[in-house]
Amino acid sequence: MNSSIKIFLLSLTFFLGGKTAFAQLENTTRDVARKHPNGKPYVVVYMKNTTGEIVKEEVYYSNGNLEWEGFYKRSIEDGSWKYYYPNGKLKSNQYYTKGKENGVFLDYNESGKLVKQSLFKDGKLVSEQSF
Image (cartoon, rainbow, N blue to C red):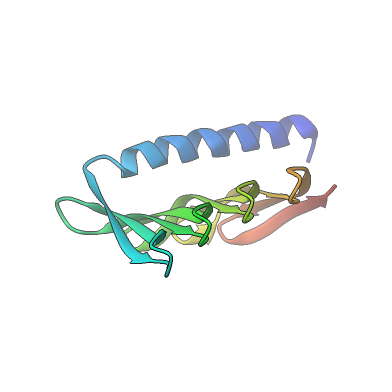
């Protein structure tokens, strides 16, 4: 796959993930479902006001930094999922459609350098490149 196609797919994934995230958080309530022993949030969920359906979940390290966050649609992973190192730097950016891996997945080392790029379609790995 040539680099211009990869860049297009990457841009499309981020664009669609952002639109999905915004739409999914409209008319929701944030609830701290669990806390760490130190009182900081551990699991935070966002629920639709009308149905109580969970549309986003955030999990935090005990230091208060985000460990991961992801979106649901009808209780299935759908949209952007991001994982972080304890220092707060992005570890992985992934995208799901109806519970299946779909789009460009990016993995970073703790310094923030891109170390792997994978392309998924309908839950199947299409290509992978390590740097």
